[in-house]
Length: 110
Image (cartoon, rainbow, N blue to C red):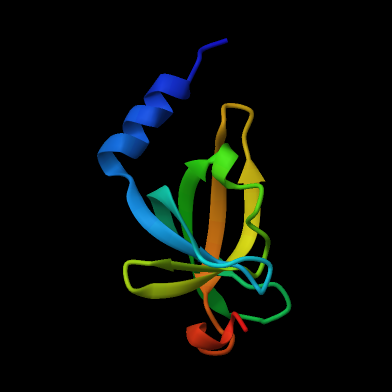
């Protein structure tokens, strides 16, 4: 099997951006490196004809264990909610992000 580790490290080193992960009260803000992967429209279940913009970013799996669904990601001066976390066997994790619809970012942590 091909080892994607060196390629993933190079990808993060060249295209990586610092993002902030704001947990729903479990810990303080954490900064990690991520690469924007894609942005597309997705039909929302249960809402006929409704769509939402889904942004995907890739991070190192070692940075993912503390991230949970509904955590807030702050990137490019935009707030996102973590919708899904997809880990691959090669050491990278994809986060599916949606528009943040919660309280103001300053109110997430006590």
